Image (cartoon, rainbow, N blue to C red; front, top):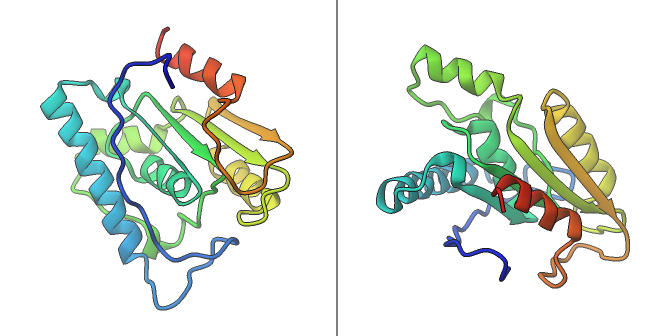
Length: 181
């Protein structure tokens, strides 16, 4: 995106689930938790080494990256500038095995539980044949219904693919607003 001048960090995030969000044996969410902690550590490194405030850090991803974006949001120890999920969903965070436990003080716990002002943008194709539209939208409605700044952009034509060009005008506008450009 040539309109913006900011560092982009790529962090792997892989765990074995099917398109319905069901765990594929023998995975026990160890890989998801490991990926989550790698991402959170990278966010901390960016804050510390680059001096970038958490409110100016955005996380996003496509498919498994979108799933990890949602996992970070639901397990994060801080609020970031925004979260963008392309063709993903929220896997069953309410299962005890999926949760990540941090040593948080009461104020931090209260902030995490209040997360109603987080800025979340999700995009999904009606014709996605890997992460089905119905499953994705149902998971978003369940987990993000209380968030005041959640937006889902639905579109046709594409299946389960990500194309940088052209960037959807609504995504571009969302980023401009969030980044005050």
